[in-house]
Image (cartoon, rainbow, N blue to C red; front, side, top):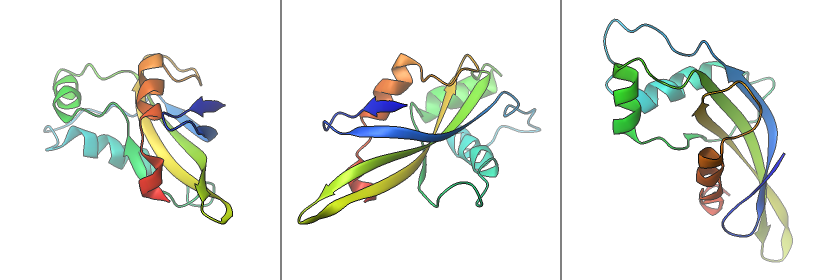
Length: 129
């Protein structure tokens, strides 16, 4: 799948993992809900199948995610996608830049919801090349 980015380029979804069992009962609230979701996402990435790449979460407002976690109302599905975007380099061939991107959604379908797609389009891929 190909997604438009705000800078006029594209990101391609290379691989995806979706799980509906990422939510767990906590004995205590983690200090940072977004970090906890990223930690759980990282456990799902096999180094034999996924390229080394930065891991980030879109739509990751820590206050909102923390409140949803406290209320046990996080969306039921966590997705981790491996995306690649080809970045132009002066006088050289384009460079493939890979990112692992985490997002939460309501349904177990491979399509990114419109609000997550909008957040994906705003990532500054240039800082990762």
